[in-house]
Length: 534
Image 1 (cartoon, helix red, strand yellow):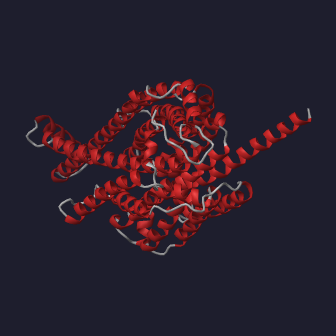
Image 2: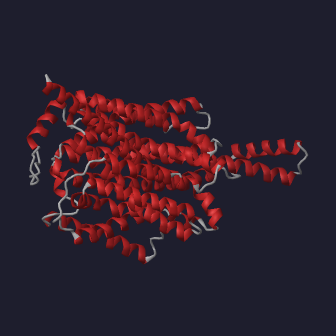
Image 3: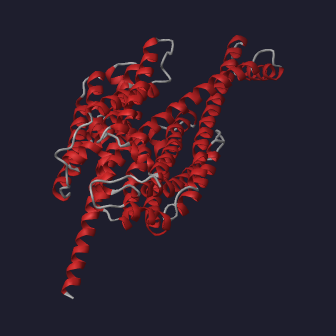
């Protein structure tokens, strides 16, 4: 009886430690991802304060993105060499210091430099926090724990514009950075006190060739993706950058496959559930960013809402994502990923497609309902499939698996924004040329409409010339607005296609029995792990 009592106390202690650890890593993850989204809304304000153009100010965002791409591949090595606890505290510290410096920045150049420091910490936080959870949370509870952790990853991009809009409208814009300081300090103190030390490999060798080729390749490609809308491909330096980036990535792959201790273990992709989860989550990530990127444009540029108002409209979907991600994680622990992923992806496709039919006459409550339904579908799909994929990786390789999956997701997010921006610009040019051809003076119906408008303006006391100019201006604004609506709907169709790709893939997700068998077969307590391709 005494033995059972001790076991119960131990079990309660482990459960308490699991939840405290979860709270610590959620703080860091939410803070890092929130800062990726919160800055976008503040760019116009910083342009005015620093008196710089759009070309220079967009580096405030690009520098952070490029730093994430360079740092994430390092996390597997850092965790193995220095332990997850130390690396996580260091990452929180770097992010907090970077946030403080960003809040004190006096010019656009200083802001860009301090964003690099902030991105160095932010890039490490998310993959290391995932490693910590896998070290602490038992297999049978990972779905629920990672579902709660995933709230930070999914809700932060939606909450960011709302919070940023409120701060810019009513408070000092520098608070979007300095608000991280007390949160970061609390997170570091909690991490130091609550997190347990983990094992580390002091003789771990650093893959210097892998680091150089990965950094050059990933940063070059991410830069070209982020700046694609502004790049003049007639300029030879961009072609050289593309060639250098691709060549570096080829060398990186060759090195990683032959190196005894690679920076990113590409052999992990032989694990089918893990590879499948990366593909599905990357595709869903591309569909997610489509709506996060497009909806604020529709709500603010066409519907006339302020950044804060548009954020409040999207807030219910963020709340729904958080709730149903936790619920989905709990259900995953009982039934596995397959029963959640298949219907979830189908609902995601249907709701995203309905969003591609937006017009100025679409009721606001219909938009909110579609966003909430879509958020529920994402809550039931993204984290379960990701958790099942990571569960299939032997525990000693989780750090490398986390670094690999987060690197691919970072690239997929940048790729999706580039694709959607390209589609939007292409449709705008195409539609504008088409409408312009329909609105010439040779088109009788348009001519009659212009005459009708001109007569109305003349009845208000305008001269014939002024009335004609006003009528043409009104028609032109109508055409531009319709072109913008058409381009937004086209990007929503593209987001729908991203989600459609996940439908056949979702049927390949293993059921719970097969997944559990696979995990038991491939788990091993030793540090030398052979990766199974089954």
